[in-house]
Each structure stands twice: as C-alpha cells, then as structure tokens.
Length: 240
Image 1 (tube, rainbow, N blue to C red):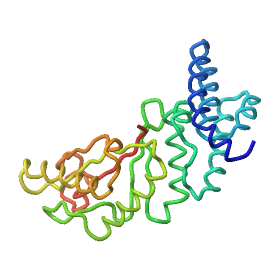
Image 2: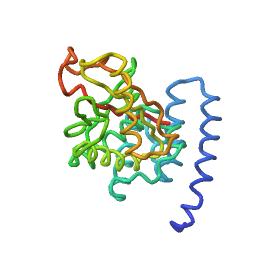
Image 3: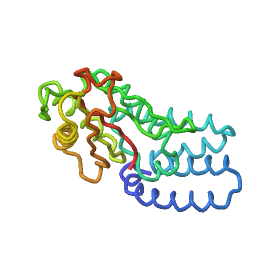
C-alpha cells in the first residue's frame, strides 16, 4: 500500500481500533490480558505502525511488549526530528496515561534538554506517572511585586510552547507562587496574575489549559518562603 493511501486510512483505523479494543477488553476476565490487548490495538492506530501489532502478539510478557512499543516509538520520532505525528486518542487509550507520559518524558529529555527544559515525573500511589513537572534553566521567575515576564522567563516559556506543540494530546496546569513578603490577599492575587501571564504568553488553545491557580506562599521551595526563588510559576503536563 502506498504511504499516501495509508495516511488516508489512519483516522478510520484509529476509530475502529478503539472500538475493537473496547470489545476485546470487555470480554476478558484477566487484567493482564486486558492491558496487553488494549496496548496492542490502541497503538496500532496511534503510532501508525501496522506491523507492530503482529510482532507484539508473539510476545508473552507485558513488560517486553511495552519495551518494544517504546523502541518503535523512539525510532519513529527520530525520523520526524522529535515531533510526534502519529499519537492519537487511539494510542492514548491503548497505552494508558503512565506509559504515554513516560514516552513524552524521554522525548523531551532527548530533544529539548539542550534547550534547558527538563521534566520530573510525578507518580501516583501505584508508581505510575500521572503528570510531568517542567523544570527549566533559570525557571520562570519574577521581580518583587511583579507578574511581568522578562528576559529569560520569556525565552523559557517560548521553549516550553515549542515542546508542547509536539504533544497535542496534552494539557497543562499552571501554578503561580510568591515569596513570604507583603500581605496575604496581595500575594494571592499576584501569584494568580503570574500564572496567567505565563498562560497568555504561551498562547495555547484554551482547551489545553486545565488549571490556572495562585498559591501565594503556600508551597515554598525552601521551607520558609523567604527565598526569591519562590517568586515563580510551575507548569505541570498531563494528558487531556
């Protein structure tokens, strides 16, 4: 089949794969079988690697299957210079949130760490990755009493926007913070304004901005809230 014709079939294959995956999952009484089937069928659509499914069917161990998916995923992205083209809702449904975010973590580490963007995995009680905390060179810091982005802060937000453009299936939570100086009501408002400044400068679609919140000095980095590093904004990435 020609590549152009295959691309035309991707949307249809994505829908069919989700339906088929749901049917098989509901008919299985084993959690392991449910995971393997949903992963295999979902990624058939999401990654656009039709031959991957047949290969994975010959594997018995769930961990080996996930490793094979990760390897094929990374190879696909290398051919597209780190830009994800095939990840769709079908792949999200098949892989699950944890593995999807683990893939994103690896890709950003490989392609954006040189630009000063790193991630920290935030895990749930089961050890699965539930969201990614963004860390950047110089972070997103502010002057005393200000919510205006300047210099390095603007550069960092632009870099983050570039990374997020590669992952249209993700959304963000943006939290603003202050140091422990001034009055409480002023800092609550200021921390929220800082978060909004980052969101506005980033220019993502509103549907991808899941939360914008100001914490004042409630979540200090240093335990006391006195450090200037507490005048910051944090961005957390999670699936839509």
